[in-house]
Length: 462
Image (cartoon, helix red, strand yellow):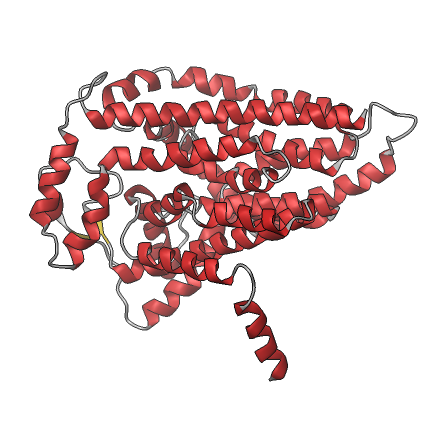
């Protein structure tokens, strides 16, 4: 009993406790109100099939890997047994006269559904912040720097928008990539691989980072073959990392294979054309998005060269990096950013959350990366707001209180939707292009900064 009381006292007197409570309260306020309708529709359908004892991939009910369903299933099974209904209900009276398809949807579920849906997001979000704090303390002895990085994550408007306005599960991917980087830094190759494998079960993107990373692990030190290159040691590390990656995928193999076949046979082309690029630069401009997506085949062709580019780059990094662990962290960030640029279905702002936690950590050593974090945070947050306008924040008042009427919300949204633009027909189109462009520029800046810091690390070795 005394040990428990002592532990509780230490938790509440920790330097992060007050900020953690504020961050938690802020997230709880956002949880019941907002959701991205496309993702929630796909997830909710798959969840309904799972709870009925059916296979979500056999009936095209889900376009996402299986891990997320096993996170949410216990929560919703318990709630379902208690008689809570999670069916969609129409709120057309709020959206009459609008073409809203972004943060305010014409179909919503109960606030309780949204709270339960975002509980796993809340857990992974806070775990990511704590991991950032611990990771930074491992990199630099300055506890103030660790606290600063934790606060950058906890109160970042972009991370809040992605997880609590969007309701996207990309924070799960970002957490596992960061966890894999942490274990790699600590020299625990099996746990690093396990982290990337679990991340791949949330969304397949981490595997595109893990494969080139495994090449670096195998061939590191190749330049000085008579001195630092130890094939036996490298092969042992490679096997530990590879086995760690494979174990979770094998565990979920039946569902994961069904998911892969589903994506290959029917959905990947649809996602590339109907999603992807439309979600970033031209989300509010159907004409320009259609023109761009007419050439989606060119983008897909470029992506076909991604494996060769990654293999060549991984060999090159193996040649120059030696065994310096900080360089491995830069490599993970580099391949995560490279994947984002090349994948035709990933040009969506919420996917920047894959790299953001690692950038926050690396900023403690390479301060220039603060620019990347700032650009992503501003561009991503205001991009979401550009699609629907600031009236989005009034949605809870209109739906759940008498302080603001649905008709006032309609009037304000329609007014914003019809506001005249300067370079496009509508203001929302101008803003989505501007902030989308800033976000894309931020990606280019990030890649340049990572390469520059990697060159400095190489010079330090020499």
